[in-house]
Length: 75
Image (cartoon, rainbow, N blue to C red; front, side):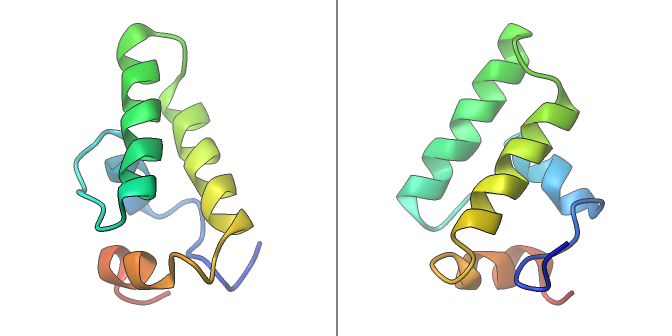
């Protein structure tokens, strides 16, 4: 697990995957919309969606630090 992003077991990841959190950065909102649509169509489970988003943020932690801080406050 990386200290660069919040732990995957935080409930905010599921809320994000379900589209309950609006992202400031357009590219992030596209990723959230993608997993939300995939869950609605049944091609992705909530666990898969949160894992996808977690891996995406893990890949680019510095670029999205402000969004993570807004959503998770601290970790």
